[in-house]
Image 1 (cartoon, rainbow, N blue to C red):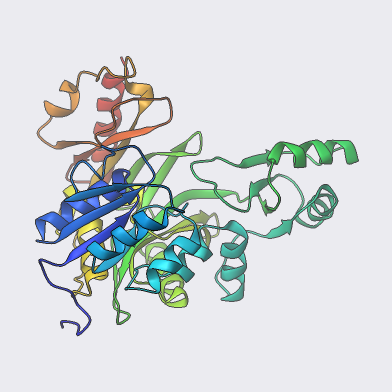
Image 2: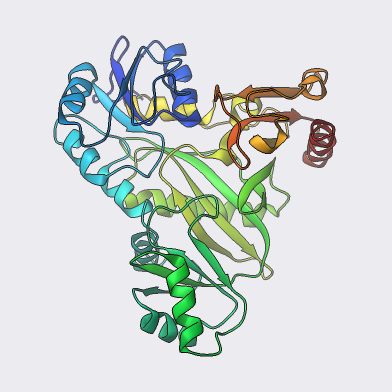
Length: 387
């Protein structure tokens, strides 16, 4: 059913952020007939700006640039969460923004995110909020070790995290840990002994419709997503529980757009929420090649107020991130033959000019008749790329 609040081509969608997620949103919007304007604090020619109809390069406190952006768009979305909430609020005062400022503020800040989960009885790891060495000492007694101390804000891909394996021996040791965090507030989380990390990427429409993608199984290396396997190698019951938890999160946020809920599967079969991403997610990149509609197509549908559909997995798949570590030199591409020679593999590069260790430069997917075969083939290809 169509929505009275939908916008139709040639309407213009504004995208805040010019990274690879913005790029893939813009490409999908273009395919669907929408114009796009990217607002980014990156230099001209960023991944999203390369394919948008227009790119505005300015800081978030540039009032003139923001007004220019507002004058050219009909609806707004964003591709990453480290955006000043006040910037989104000022846009939201003028035209629709999906997801909302409330969703952004909740998910961009670990303290607010954890309190949100607790307040809605959504299971998560035990935690305590800390703002000093003294409160950290109290929290360590409450939570115990091992545990992880995380900055309350602006953390991703393992940044802003300190694992504490054993209880500090004295106040000076606690003070050192707190100093190393280098943040005014933090969240101390109990260590979770999980058997698998999974995620649910889903779309939620303006009227509350909910469209989940198949559950992903995720393998991380150095806190950065390495490989995603779909379908996840978990029980049907666990997969259904993961989807139900994701729906609870989306409903509680009043969310509009695509979001991801990352979860830990415990030994007893229960699930706890680790993090919420208010945007399309790295673990959902497989949807471009393996589903009848991608997460980016669903983002554009939701943001534009168009009907959602129930995504279908066409073939099992494994997605592997390509970090800058694979590049022989900062501006010299690897030999992509191992991917391109395989008829079941698909290569995606993000248009970033300079490769750095740990920087997400692209990904590839491998399709197969079953998830295990897809995973094994993906690891063989990655091994060849690293030679």
